[in-house]
Amino acid sequence: MFTDWFIVRRLAAELEGAVGSARIREAGVTSDERFALRVRARGAGGDAVLIDAFGDMPAITLQHGIESSREHGWPRTIADAVEGMRIERVRARRGDRLISFDLATISRFGVLSSYRLVVELEPRFGNILLLKGNAIIAAARAFSPEQNPRRPVIVGESYTPPPLPQPAFSREQFIEALQPLLESPSSDAAASAAKALRRYRPVVPYLVAVSLFTAAMARSGSEASALAEHVLAEAESLVETAGANPDAPVHLYRNDDGIVQAHVVPLAQYRELTSDVQQSMLEVMASISTARQLQNAARETETRRDALLARVRRRLTTLAEERRRLERTLTEELPERLRIEGELLYAHESDVPRGASEFVPPSEPAITISLDPELDAKANAAAIFKRYRKTLGRRNHAQRRLEHLASEVAAAEELAWELERADAATLAELTDDADRIERRPGVPSDRRQKRRSAMEFPISSDARVLVGRSPRNNAELTFQIARPDDLWFHARGVPGAHVVLRIDSSRAPTSAELERAAELAAYHSKARTSGIVPVDYTARKHVRKQRNALPGLVWYSNAKTIDVTPNSTPGRPHA
Picture 1 (cartoon, rainbow, N blue to C red):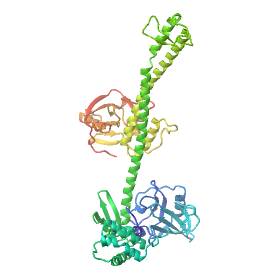
Picture 2: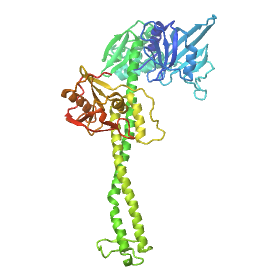
Picture 3: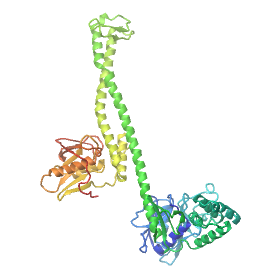
Picture 4: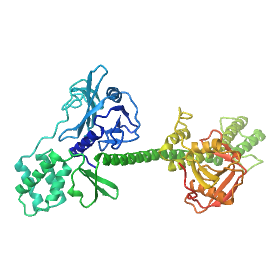
């Protein structure tokens, strides 16, 4: 969605009605880096003015339930100055995407103090500034004369508003540029005519200019000069009135993906889309902003997930290469052959010619022993036994490492599956786990993170199934929440969630309850898409942690197995 100064003027008009004369209780920065003014609003839309000057769609909205913090730097400076002040007036600048809040307060000694909070909502060039008189007290973005010779922004210096665009076309040039639209009406011709109007009258927003010419294409037989007069008259009328009335309708245009555009004037270029009318631009912008925040958060989550998955898959590749190398050690180096060769040399020491490079023992004519011609038979035998001991040590190490490697591979595969199912709330703890499987130094043993409870599925009046959401949640569910005699379920041989069946009475679980718990365990596992999944279950007291392993990796015993079809429908989960 595009914004222009008509929309910004409407936002200012609605903000004037909603928060004019309201007192600022708190100010700070939200977790998504928007600046928030918590106010006592008059019941319109929310109690926090949210200023997003640096997003891809700069805007100001009014929302409820916003948390902010007083960070250092310009947010702290502005917060210290404006908290406790009243918003005396909210204004927009004609022809510009700029809103200013006039703030004032009277001390208990009767001294008037006033500031002006200026918000520049220009895409890619947004800014938030606090002014005392015309002097800049704080600025989110400061620019030296070397960085921006045309308009430096320096704390302590005077504030200069962004320059407004100046006309680049004469009236004659503008009229001449309309001829293609008259000769061959099209959306492209209307867009070119709109650009020409903007070059002649820059104060007319581009979307409005396109709308005027799209509608004007129906005026067949017009002369260019007459078309110019008609469009200019309508444009001038809109420039004077559009967005100034906070009660005028807001026109909303949608497609299958959601809101395409909202504006304070009807836009003819969107007439093929689904349209409706809303009453508040603040509410529309809040809805769009929330949707964008969710989309951005989802994209960030997917980007983070992909990066972590790439790390885990690289680790799995490294482990696979190490396993192949260890397996070659076991197959290519045969210590038993070296032991036999050494014993044969000792047995036939007197038969080995001096300076020989190889020797065939008379007692074992099928064996040829390679020798170092610089050494005698006894020394060659000692060298072979030394190689034998080293080879034996390498084989023993390879066997032990292969056993440990299997658990590392299992941990990495488990983590890869957990990453695939993780939501944004659990990715942070999985980052720690990715660090651990890569053996990165300096990894904290347990970062403090907000943990969520396990998913809960009621399956009868006194029975429920608990499902872990993440590796740490699995460990907490199994070793802190589950009781010793609760039944513990896990899909056999594949990564999966820990599942606990809890009966809140002294009775034994029914076969149907066992099957439902197993279905959930199968569904919340890597085998979710399989037709039939074997699920092991045992009493929780027979489950133990794997030593020096990632959270949630366990050994269990005394298990029974039930074959089920993965199913997530038994009961609705409680958050």
